Image 1 (tube, rainbow, N blue to C red):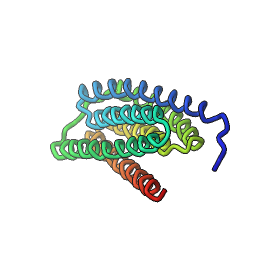
Image 2 (cartoon, rainbow, N blue to C red; image 1 turned 45 degrees about the vertical axis):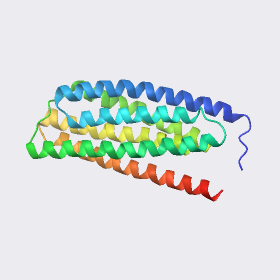
Image 3 (cartoon, one colour; image 1 turned 90 degrees about the vertical axis):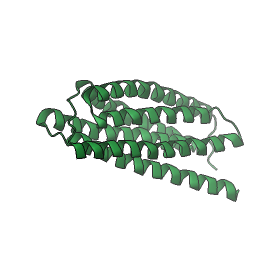
Image 4 (cartoon, one colour; image 1 turned 90 degrees about the horizontal axis):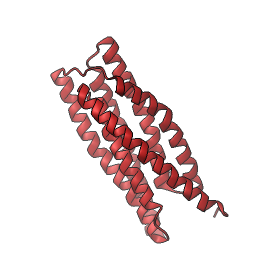
Length: 210
């Protein structure tokens, strides 16, 4: 077993600080994305905002996990990752339905400058958070923090997808770009949900074998 020495308390503080930053950023991100998405009629932007709500919940769950000690810490970690996985599936169903409906009805979203600015900002902030959380997670051997780090990286992928969709719709008039971008976001959500649930199954099997 690797000796963490005196670094564990420091790493735990880093983990808590990173999650607090994640919760704060995603709260702002969700507010701007939902308001801009509803104003522009953009399902991709609304889906991005709802994803930020899920990431906020994930960050709060990981913060709760780091408040636990002893055997309760392992249970909290598994529950936190399972919660994120399940909510991703629910979110994917909603965004996928709305995107298909928009394609069928040929609903055209309006260009959203706040949405574009938000997507660019997320492309800068979220990869940095994701890399930092995964580094700390390796030192703490925390599956929950590692999964949350991957969720932050996923947000960066979603930002790039959203940016392309909004740009094609706003500058070239490709009305279908927005719902197609939303469908791509849905695919990312399903994949991340599957990965999260696989991680909890492995963790539960490990607990049972102890």
